[in-house]
Amino acid sequence: MKRVLSIILMISLLTVTSACGTKQQTAHKSGKAEDKKIQIGMCFDSFVIERWQRDRDVFVSMAKELGADVNIQNANGDVEEQKKQIEYFIKKGMDAIVIVCIDSESLKDSVKKAQDAGIKIIAYDRLIQDASVDLYISFDNEKVGSMMGDAMVKAGLVNGKVIMICGSPSDSNVAMVEKGFEDVMSENGNTIIDKVYADGWKAELASDYIYNNLDIVTEADAIMCGNDDLASRAVHALAEKRMAGKKLVTGQDADLEACQRIVEGTQLMTVYKPIEKLAQKAAECAVRMCKGEEIEPGTNELSTINDGTYDVPYLSIEPVSVTEKNMDEVIIKSGFHLKEDVYLNVPGKMPD
Image 1: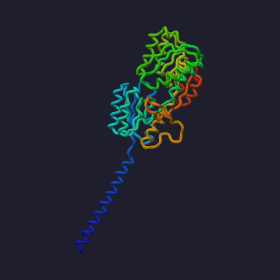
Image 2: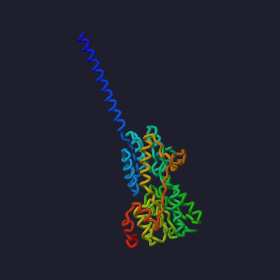
Image 3: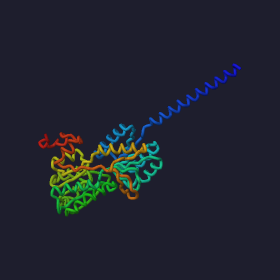
Image 4: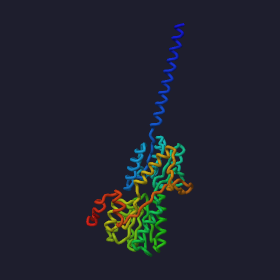
């Protein structure tokens, strides 16, 4: 009888110990699941354009603050490489992929494959066509074009002649900027005497245009450049032909050299796009989406935009027109560029 009781007691103890072990293992596994960090892949066109490095740094910083890890890939302007990088992110099991697309019409199959794998897709700054991304976040690009046109008109351009050196035709934002600019030109009697595109946003194409079309350039009163990188090359070529400061030149992105040219008098204006706000908001949205939360609860900022086939969620950030008059207020006070850097070549103009 004693032996039977001993055996029963041993079995009972083993059962309790096993149950406790199972509970501990379950709790341990549950803890691991809770501790799993959100994984975000971010694929850039390239880092040739000055602003993309700033976008990257702000996005990564904010994502980490929110408890997510970010894997950065740079396609160096190669569409096929960008597709491979998206495939890599799919295989890595990313929770979200943020894409600065090279060609807005070439990634819809890659996006669908990622979404089929349960991955959220954010089109960052550039809309991906016909892809039904989960979110498109950018600036109001039509307004960017309008601001360029308005600045020229305020500088006296009415019934004048304008050249447009636009960005890459594969960038969906370019058409939006064009529309905003051309509407303002038309309303004020200005004629577009030539319009060209810089494939792949290659800045040297802007200077090539100036050198190879001096007759048209001489005739023009103003030159609209798709971004500050293009404007930089255009102004350099104009300077060689002794026309810098004699043509109204506009750009966008508020690159340091553009701000320097504005206070020097060789570029009329640029468009400041608060990159910090865009990148931070994109990181916040990515984390929210991965958690199954609303993108932008309780605000009116979220709307929709048609990507050619689908109406996709669209979060737009307001740009700001920058001229010499508001350079200090917009650029310097915000800390986007340092005062001594902006006024490096014209210290006599530096404000107190």
